[in-house]
Amino acid sequence: MANYKRAFTLDRSAQAAGSALKAAWWGAAGVAARRAAKPGGSGSAVKAPTAPPAPEGFVRKAWLEAFEKDQRDIAQGLYPAVDDAPGNPLRAFKGALDFVADAREVEARRARGGAVEAREAAPASGAYPAYYRQNFHFQSGGWFTTESARRYEVQVEALFAGAAGAMRRRALSLLAQAWRGRDHRGVRLVDVACGAGAFLKDLARTFPRAHLVGVDLSSTYLEESRVRSGISALVQAKAERLPFPEDSLDAVTCVYLFHELPPKVRPAVAAEIARVLKPGGLLAFADSIQPEDEPRLERLLQVFPAYFHEPYYADFATTDLPALFSAAGLAERGCDRAFLTKAILFEKAAG
Image 1 (tube, helix red, strand yellow):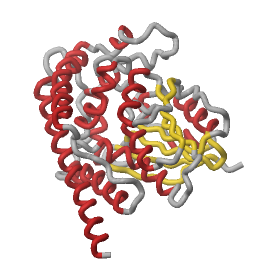
Image 2: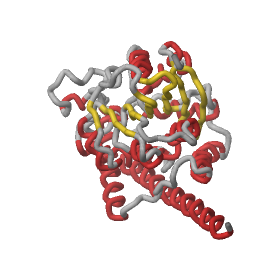
Image 3: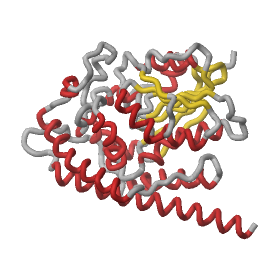
Image 4: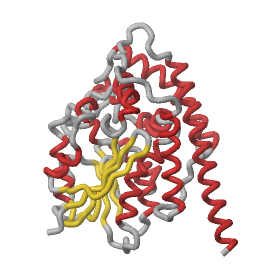
């Protein structure tokens, strides 16, 4: 028993050390990118935030809470310890250099208002709706290039100073709690808008016996997801038209999608998720917190769409999410928050 407790303590300490290293690394990369890009220069038009600043020390406290919750859930055995260090040093260094160099392009695009330049990189196909063919976050290539797919996780981690993984695992925590003690063999789980595959990788490690499928509209992001997660069951499809039979899935996960959907599309996606879930099936949802969740962080929420092209974020910030999913037949069963992300667990009525 003493040896077990010692090993457990070491595992938790290693996880905490890895998280600290990751936070320091990507926090430094974010600072370097902002200095290289020099945001707010000539030609840029940034709307100043109107919300008051957060109380002194509160932002750091909220940021640290994301890591604390992550480590707590690992300690409780909800999901395995994750490798939160930057990984291969040479690859991490090259990724950081690429991110910093591209930050200049991102800032130049923001300054000139190049929100739809990605349409030039988009394949000549009617499969991509107009709302999708944009440079969300003003990122180079939009969702269409290999470079964008490889750079995405770096951008997200740098933006949130290494807390992105810990934040989105709030959705994993809710699902793992709901499924604790369940035999996952034969369970069908689909990650909608799997992007570059970081959350799909977490799902694969937590539910290794489940049948996992990743869905995304970008072929380049699906390829990056395959490499990152090791999952080969990947499907290119719209979230509002999922290629699965009615009542066929045990669970769906959806992370950071809804704030990038137009208001009229969100109900269609919610209804489609409800359609493919079995009665009693679960949706583990995660996205940005809304001002009502934590008014002390509202200033950060205002800064985000001001500097990054997020055309539908303002409407998302005031959307009643439980009501949205309730209209589709999904009832809220749990909720959790960490820093700038909130997760909600929904359940489809059983019969």
